[in-house]
Image (tube, rainbow, N blue to C red):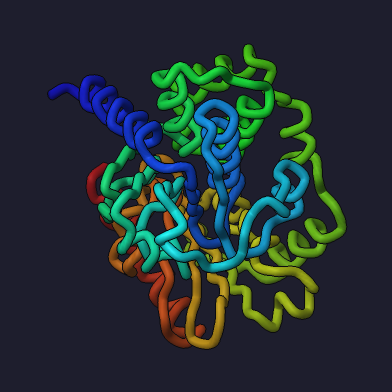
Length: 334
């Protein structure tokens, strides 16, 4: 079966599952949701409520960046647990592995009706129905194609939510995951009056004092190895001193990877004692995702992550080791 036919069959299956399910739908996002995850969730909520007459609740327990708060009505997200008996259909968006469902992992695994919609490399199958397309730079684009098949009426709000996700996950069309489809989808959404100026203001022209503080911290504390690898370690004490949560530091690895000559970069963020989240970024030829998988993580070819449970020094050592291996193996193929 060719890919197009396979996806169309999945689209039909998902539409049928939505139509045939009961009234109550829950949308689950990954821990520490980014703008693509939020854009996917809010666009899906708009569609299911407005055009399928469903009662939809988005669940997540984390905090959000200032940019996210400007784009999305965060008050509509429930932080509570829920009983599976009260939910007819569970849909996850932008969630690559079941562990990234956080406290809702057990709900998802035990629910009889689940749909996974994602754009990461599919290293963990956990949905009863799975629509995963890693050829797209964002989950918002996967939903866009699904909505087109379902003949959804695209409102300006839906188009803006999807454009936000596409723009953010492609790094305003600068990241390595950007391809011709990214531009085609952006054009499609622009023609539907997606509010590009609003999204650009929220994401790229929002350098408030918090942003300036964390950026100053980054440039005062990062390290470079052999002129090719850059990394920064951020502890809970650092966050406390800065007066920010770790979402404020989400762009650190991308900023480091933009330094001239750097091939692979990462931020190493303390989550709690002996738990560190490592966020990797790499240049085009240096595919870091495989090496993130060595640490139990994964993601895109040039943007991946992992969580390690160890001391700060060991977390730093593990991150540096896999970045060096990535460079060695890649350049051995040149």
